[in-house]
Length: 259
Image (cartoon, rainbow, N blue to C red):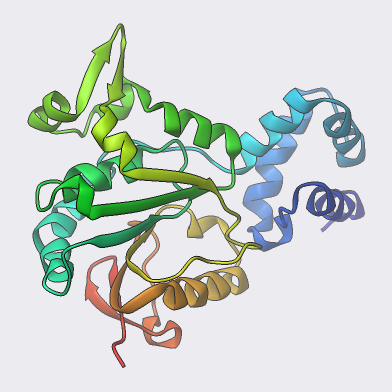
């Protein structure tokens, strides 16, 4: 790792609380080098100085760093397992469910969760916390307004029931939006909330180092109730779930061991 990049990491950590050393170096450095060069800087020291002086540049950097790629019903087959197997299992034990959508980006995932859950229980019995590191992404999530490209996996009956067309975009209906609480949260630095029946964190862990993953998995395990479910992305299979207090429940779904 070059001295220029090491100092950049340290200065970013001091300024934002974001620890880039916990992310896979090759992927992150490549992404940020491309952005840096696009803005006319040939080293990270010069680029950081520009971030200090320009809030628009800083917001662009944060947006690129946090990899905001999302859509409704992403990997739809997994949501079918959630709907047909996981939710009925969770509802055997209680009538109201607490869910955490971690690294929720622009909100497609937590809203999808609300729509899927509503097929089983009223939204008044659903409490969804949705968190992300990127404040701009959370702002878009709270607005609940999406382009058609984000909706290509949404079943027609769901589109009709839970969205209202506004020009060339679609807005999530108020009842669904009210079931989700959005908050800023850093998976690598902040305290983890507790007592969730289901935690969903998908397509984010692939960017972290192995050491960072171990810490995050342990924290998620502590945040789940006994018997709670952890739902991961389709490229993020946990190979030794027992070391984190989990057992396989279904493909890409893990259950916290019950004491």
